[in-house]
Length: 197
Length: 364
Image (tube, rainbow over all chains, first blue to last red; front, side, top):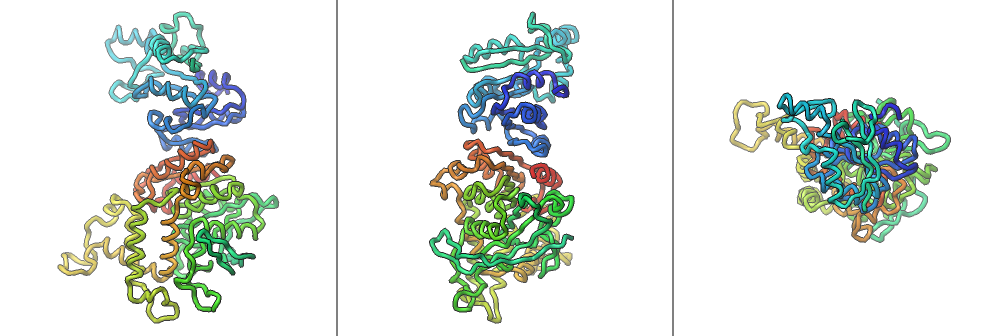
């Protein structure tokens, strides 16, 4: 699991053995592969980019090409033990609806996203007066897929409003886990484990 | 080119048909590539499309052209004959060795229109009977594009234990009204040809070649995309500098379609075209399962599916294939789906699309 991105490694560690998992925005299926091979999970994926789907299918994974915003609605209620949304929430047109779908098809969900309130982001905006371009948000404002920048505190407020419970939270800076103190300021990105209340 | 073993078996018993009739003395012609392993679990059944045949990866005996999926099947190719024992049967109703309207009926004369109307499921039933004869209980995979994809889906739905994987490309779970409409144009063209003679043209001097050619021309348009046609022909004139102000094939696209139509009549039987298009038009997996497509796949949750569509295919569209994906999701069958980008329309599954090769190889 050491080759996985830290947020994915964290998620992989906390997915129960043998779980039925849906990875939304699964890319080439790196996380799914780990979940299948080392945890015996029945992992399925949803991915919008056909080249990434082809790569995942080539690994023997079951991945459906589709747009999470539209196609999650096709999955039955409670079809999965775990639904995963990594680094995709900020690209959704309606993150609130996406979270609701996630906790409809999955009994629990893992969600990770870059924290726009990270102090380097704030500093970039404050001192340069420009939209920050960082490792986790590496693309200029006009071509980015990230259309809803979110902070740790915004996310907490949104899920509370949606009646979603936060079961766990982990924070990372420079690919290392940090404690939860002042996470909204100190975390470069965050991972949450959620369930319906 | 591969060396293929061309074979034919006589099915041991009569074949029950969806129409309620039975077909006795059924012969199924097929080719195989590669070798069956000791465990007999490396067989891949490849189903051909409407006008295809068992010459999957070997030269066609009439045209001399390479097999229709030569690029996909062979040693080291995506369907690797070093790993798999590949079987490609000719469907019943066809004209390349399997029992069809040109075959002799009980009285020794060709069936003609006395041949029973068959369905996609009947075709698959004959293939399953062939597998029984070959002693293959469970396929590694069932693979097909277009009508071949319908057979692969039908196999999974109706004989759920018989295959571990299903790869269905550029296909659908049911024929749409538009699909049926195009087929009806073709059938009417054949039946309007005076040489058709009510289907009793076998042994006669004239065959409904003009009608069959027109049917092929109309169908061929549906296999291509507008962009592909424009790219290939545009409005270019054929062998002339100016319009003739007549009805010769002035345009290259006309000349191409005429050639496609005429060369088709050398290798295909008009009555087979009627029967096979009818089988496709009747195809509706949901209807077979009481109206629910998910129900059709209720026993298939142990089979892995991979579905592929092409963005320029307007005959069997991405949304047709998504309907199958949704049904498979509803029964929690492991399914992959990808829409590939290719300029050639429906025919993309037969042409050079490297991304398709990667998906096929990876999935198998």
